[in-house]
Image 1 (cartoon, helix red, strand yellow):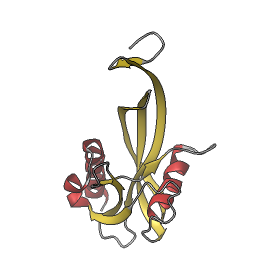
Image 2 (cartoon, helix red, strand yellow; image 1 turned 60 degrees about the vertical axis):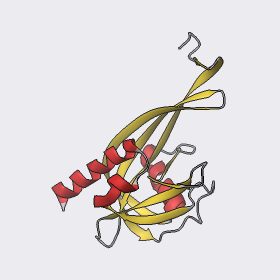
Image 3 (spheres, one colour; image 1 turned 90 degrees about the vertical axis):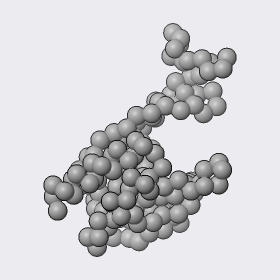
Image 4 (cartoon, helix red, strand yellow; image 1 turned 120 degrees about the horizontal axis):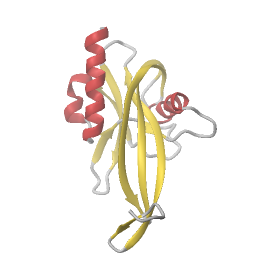
Length: 159
């Protein structure tokens, strides 16, 4: 890291940028112990299943952003049950080093139905229900699998 806040990557200077997203796991309204995940296409054409999430817009707080993003990416109307925690990671994009914090919430479906038609960026190519007990094999990213264990623990305590 240099004094300007960037770091070097193969001779390039990267500018560090902080980003925040919010989203989470939505429990199905029917009580079936399933959550909705979105499928995103990788560069190789494979679908990675991940937690719906996105950036706050305007004056939105994290909870409002999570609720809006869930509707846009899954078609589901939701309410927040509780905060599950956050994950932090870094990646480079162009000449930027993105330092990202994602805030996860446990939510409950209150209406709507699964669709990716409302996603303005068309990031999600599919959305499906997944059994909570299978999230460790369904989710593409280890940091999301760790948060999913928190969902399983919440269910064990509360249902």
